[in-house]
Length: 269
Length: 69
Ligand SMILES: [Zn+2]
Image (cartoon, rainbow over all chains, first blue to last red; front, side, top):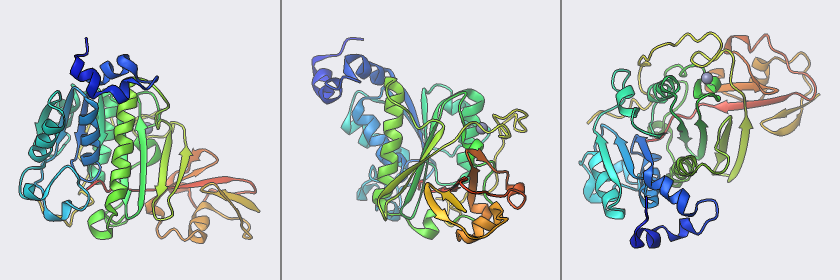
């Protein structure tokens, strides 16, 4: 790949980084990333991946933009209310960077469609709002040996970890979804918009560093922050031998849908 | 005894303290909300009242966070 003059100028602040350079930028320009959920996490992630020049960005979301989304879902603007999120996001990505190819999937992920959706991507960003989707994404990525970034937010708190094939997965940490109602959801508990932005941006940085192949990803560790006190901490872990999907005797051998999304207060459009 | 909870050293005066007991002391509302790591190994949810902490143990609570919306 030969960068055009325009590309050299557009990506000059990346190229000047010794860890990125022309080679790293070319890797980004050849990369394919999938963002599942275009909410508080997926919005900033999509903006940064688009600006960085990721070649193909897949967008998965079945919802339409609602007024209450705009406090944190920064890829959607006021005139987008009522529009499918994948279309709203696609328009912004195209406006930021016409180089980027966008594939839209106006649907939710389920056990019977996720495998086909993730198949052609190099890296997956989980920006979903419910445990059914989070566990499904983990299972699909473990079974298909695809790296992905997990992100979770609640109130002022955020957590992120990255799965790479052969390393600890989300189920190594959280064996199974919590019982319904045990963990409050964002619509019940609230979320500071900027906290979603911090975490979605961390997820974008994981994806970009994965594509470039530099630095230490959040593999085998969870980054946890409390933005009310603005403190970050990290918990290291290893693969869990009793993990139900990547452990010694896995009980999960095929994909299935977990019950009931966590953010069940929200009515489907 | 001194134990490290979420990276912070804390003095605990209770003896024969189980993980389940520690969750209560640490005011974790429900054991369902967290995954517990003891000295780098995850504690099975079914074993929280059979697993005991001792001096200089390190315990981490990892909370479920589902939101992305
Ligand atoms: Zn695992």
